[in-house]
Length: 86
Length: 377
Image (cartoon, rainbow over all chains, first blue to last red; front, side, top):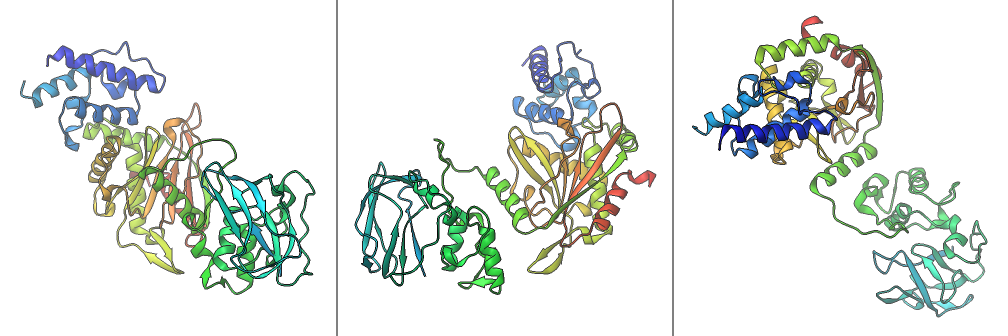
């Protein structure tokens, strides 16, 4: 899967989760730190992580769930490729 | 003593039946097992039989009349001249209203059957005879009747409720819904639940959580997990709050299993971190995070949703400024975190507690300690 395709999927899910609490995530940049944007709350981020594991078919250990690996759309996409050996 | 004959339930989906025949008249003698009437639903016609020998004292229904299941359709007495209890209403069109003052609620009827009591034995002041009337009567008789205590039969499985009159359909509860039913019923039937709350400034906690998140590069705010962990530590130091009451005796848990509510879609889970008192703060946050992810993915393991000894609940996500949580079974305390008031950091921290075990003083002390993060105590 291409990185751009992964980012499109993540962006779509983020928009959906932000929309659930009345926020518009259409302007988020690839490098924006997701928790710092305030577009999704903790439950939304948790939902994003659970979706991420499922969508890209990988199981995360708790210690992998950090800003370095999953903090932005860019880093989330890179981490998929890293885990998949791409 | 007059004995009521109730309109039987023919089919669980029908709460109204048609009287197709009444085969006795007032003054007739009957023997137990004699057919005294027939009732019909869309699916069946069944006979109504006398449950004891005696005399038909009064018939309260007519052939071709539609009557409500559970209404009194006639009275049978041990002798022909017994007085039948007077109905509250004289409405001639409806059996159920004519007999309203003697019509027990569904729960009361189950208790009457269990204890082999007659409706006429039980004094009541309300419009209908209720389970509470019967429990009070039983308590006045020494706490038992028919060898069964009121508490033993006062469970959701021990009686059959009538269906509402409005059309609808039945479906079984999911495992999660059944869990919530059991929790709420334990709270109702066993705990003597009380609630208190304390106002506090959330700023210190927010600062503490933000620093912790930065130090560990967390994706999620650890505010609520850190507050829950603080509660775990308080329970470790004050074992009295990590306790329940079983058969009149205090049961002190040897470990703290922290129950933490998680809403997933329409389902509310009480996720549980087992032996949380053996963890440090980071371990606890990781363990709770994992349990929450399992709940989100609907892949909770059995041990992740049972045996809570203490509870923590938050409705801040929905901007709820105050909520009174239901106690998890066999717990004495559930802390309630709520959203700060708009435009500030002022919030309330509440707690439901089992007043059989904890006093308001005990709980206020816990809440007071919980309003501040550990490093600024």
